[in-house]
Length: 434
Image (tube, rainbow, N blue to C red; front, side, top):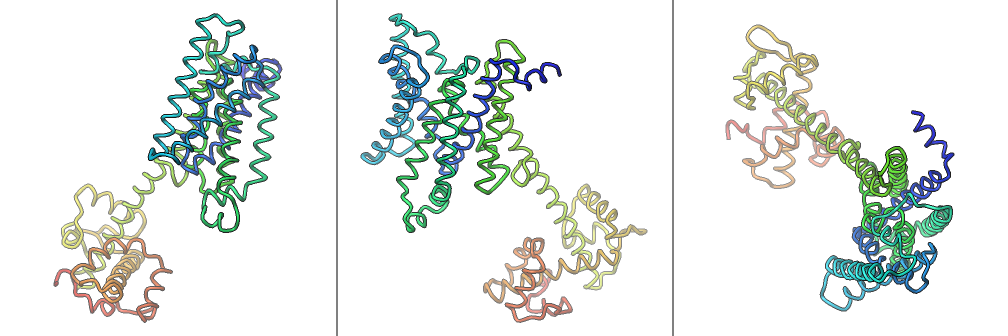
């Protein structure tokens, strides 16, 4: 606890610079990456990141110093050239976009490795630390780096705010946006600029190899939590910053633990948690909803079958054998289903079987009514054979809402209080008799 409090206080200047830089980078990367994610161009970030290595090394060779501004400029130029080459290849040849990205990524990165090997083998002065641009070295952040991160973050944020509506229109409805005068090319250029700016300042902290992950993983995680653009940008930025903060803490609390890789591990854990437990889209949530749906369908099928037996004069008492004549239930499924229905007060156990309660009978009759209404609709409006409508209705009866039922009856010219059930079903023979 003392270690955490000391970390939170940021009293150590070295810790302060690292935390500020990595948190700003994570938030900026998550926000910028969301645009490429929504445009289905996530690999652009990876290509740009790997393509910056030769730019960094050429900038070093030309200047002879490892000045952050010079390195960022070289990285940005190299990254911009990679995007231009990708566009040129796709426009001037039959090579598709993903193949062009792979070609440019491997070519530029390979050139960078060749340059790095040449520099190291020839003992060029002041070369130490250049390899940190490959895997990152957030622990070496300086006040100048923090200022650079903050400055670029403000520039990127300003560009996003200034062009938000145009970017949103291009992403979600490009044809409409262009029809009202928004230039797709300009927006693509803008997104490329903020992507290059983000990557060029971030490669020193997390490295060229892992920088693309910081652009891809936070928006992927955020997408599980929302369907709206602004919340996604915010959530993605928060996830990126949180991953950076956790990564810096792990590096601070444990020796020989690099900040950059732990930042990627942290955002990856956040993404896995989002994938599993996010509302509506999480795997656990969806599996649970499917389980509840299967339970509800089984319960409704049993109640409907019991009501149909009553209507056809087979008595109020029902057993698994009598229900199985209309709807099959294996023993374990039967026991679980009648147990839930009994606990809800929809059926009552009696000697020799079960009977419907008043609420259960009303519920089952409502399901039976929806079934018959859908059969009539399919036969009259869709001209479907009477031999086929029953199976279709078996599924739809569980999803018809009162509003949909009312609309169907209105279209069929029937009163919403139309009763009894057998009258509305008279044009569709009982499936047992067909």
